[in-house]
Length: 84
Image (tube, rainbow, N blue to C red; front, side, top):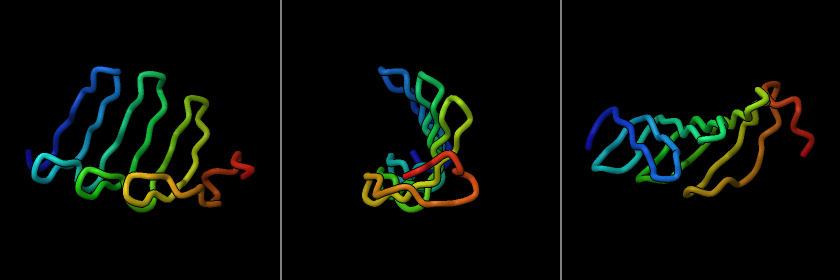
């Protein structure tokens, strides 16, 4: 698949975003069954760079991902509830 698409996983997750050569590549969003959401960028199927985590209570955290792994939370005005 190339371009815009979505994929439903057996565990209830939904990915909606861009694909390149059947891999998540570009802007996208994961929606989890519990209502939590991650918005960000993917490269060759792995989350990369700055992304936004939105909790079910509306709390927003900005994080930094590298090669599919979250490296940490970034302090910003958007995540004032984050004390780490």
